[in-house]
Amino acid sequence: MAILVLAEHSNAELSNATARAVTAAKAMGGDIAVLVAGSGCKPAAEAAAKLDGVSKVLVADAPQLANALAEDVSALVVSLMDGYDAAVAPATATGKNVMPRVAALLDVMQISDIIAVKSADTFERPIYAGNAIQTVQSGEAKKIITVRTSAFEGAGEGGSAAIEDVTAPASAGLSKFETAELTKSDRPELTAARIVVSGGRGLGSAENFKTHLAPLVDKLGAAMGASRAAVDSGFVPNDLQVGQTGKIVAPELYVAVGISGQIQHLAGMKDSKVIVAINKDEEAPIFQVADYGLVADLFEALPALQAELDKSGK
Image 1 (tube, helix red, strand yellow):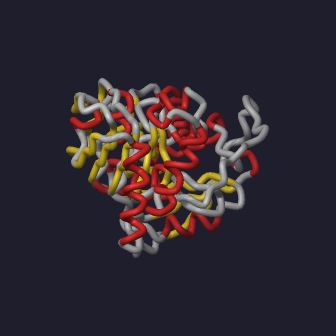
Image 2 (image 1 turned 135 degrees about the vertical axis):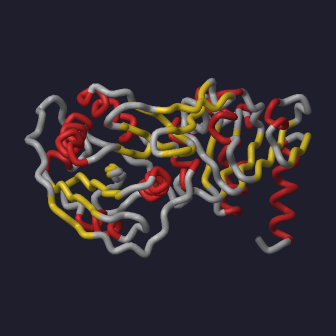
Image 3 (image 1 turned 45 degrees about the horizontal axis):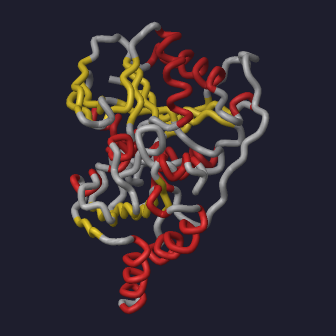
């Protein structure tokens, strides 16, 4: 079986999401090639070549691929698929934009957001906001797959794959890149962080996020997250939202502060290794998934927790 993994990258750097997609591809068995499509993307290609399990890296370096416009990247993937049985991509904003187009152009069913590989043609994926796991067996000649990266460990380094250049099709001319506004932060990226501290509507205001939650986040070296209720209330920007309609995370430690734990939020964090919940409502659904729960007023609990961390020298 030959598998093509679409790399997630910034041209200069390879995203860890690519390494996680490679792990899923390895579980399917067969030869794995990674496609790095971009402009000036040699550094990302060299990083991909070092991933364990990758036998070949294909580099499509062209101006029209600089910003990963879905129409151009999907045309490139389709042009290569004669040599591959499956195409795999992380279920990120880019992957979710490109892969449905690939599936449509190939006239096959896409298998979305897989969390486990049972065999080369059988996969598990969450449905009903993660309350049920669906097992899907595909009989398609070409399998088009997106991977929930939080469900897979990243492939390690140690590989030395060959790097080959491939020619990209001409620009489709259907869309053009205008601008991108990137949030800059000294904190870890939310979906890749080992520790995530999230706040909910219980914090009450944007100012309370800054004065009460942010010190704990920074003390733990964590990423900051939020519930949809907090985002909808304007407390924090929507790029911090964790949940079914936000980002899916599975850190080693997830701390939920003032979050009731509605099903949509649980779908985005319940695979975290250790879950700690702080909420004054002892009936809050978050306690059903929490490993440790504290029924308390968060405005009293957070300063006390901060004081204990200070004492321990953390």
